[in-house]
Image 1 (tube, rainbow, N blue to C red):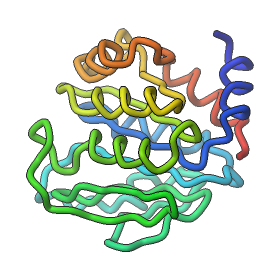
Image 2: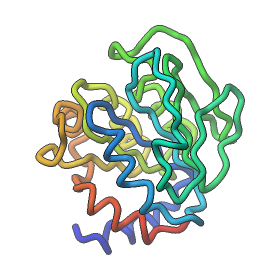
Image 3: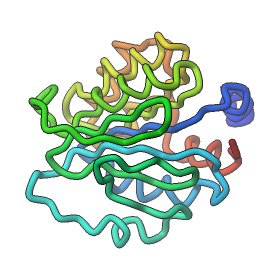
Length: 198
């Protein structure tokens, strides 16, 4: 599928949110992706990255080239359009149909907290077909069940091509769970997202 076809499908789906998950190698990938996001994107971008619980990352500094404001989520935040939200270390992040964000200290899922699956499954429940889910590089299977839930709900599923991932277990697990997902390189994702406006 060409970038134009991916863009046309994304526009047709009219997502209310974009959810992204990744682990090993994904911070740098997200740093490449965020400058490509249109400043008037029109939807929030909700992100789970596996980081150490002790991490005190200054996300605004890490993603200083982002075209969108960058915020670490606080409990009961309302996700605003054209803003990049990151789950804080050691908290699951969930979203509901009103774009309310909540944090949880429930047990880790796939040995991870925050868990990509937790975010993706809540987003699939909340938005159904009006959702784009993206799985990036990572060294475990977190995100696979969540991407499958997005796909079952009629949402659009993207997976970074395993060949281009620093750690390919996560994208491979996602594709095994959601074989209908589209496989894209980071430059392909950048090209599509650069031209997308909700």
